Image 1 (tube, rainbow, N blue to C red):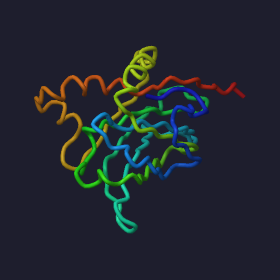
Image 2: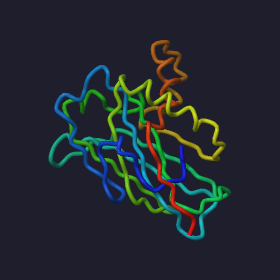
Image 3: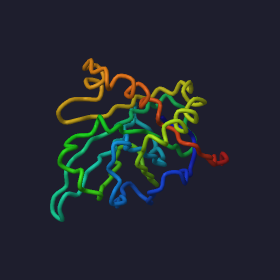
Image 4: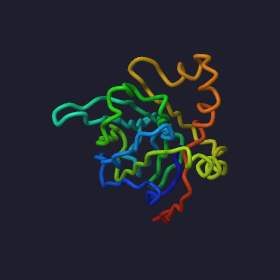
Length: 197
């Protein structure tokens, strides 16, 4: 989801200036209550915008000093038809079920998050690990933003199978959580909007 704004909420407890950040999670972060990762970036548009502008987020785990393990990618495509006159915030959620190689990086608490785009400029980024205790707050706070009508398309890519394939696999244990996870994109926050210049 994209909203007009220029300040990443403090709820994202890992933040960095620029388009990447490295995260050292606490030693016991991996539990059965861990549900995925949420992130937010502030970005601006280059002039003139292309027909479709794309931003992607790559997530890697550092499993040794010289080896990074690819975990997943999330991408948003934004149409130039949107009348954007200020910086924007992109919020998204990468559910645990969409990430690859879970058996290989459980012991790692060092993550690398990279945002990239040819058409857009990433100014700041934020990140947070999501646990089951966060779900009710996230769902409640996302409701006012579900019908903004912005022509954007979010997807999460996997190397072996996509999140869509996972959700359509017919696994009854995953059906309800996956439906819930699609709404977990906006935390409780206050967004400061820039005044038009």
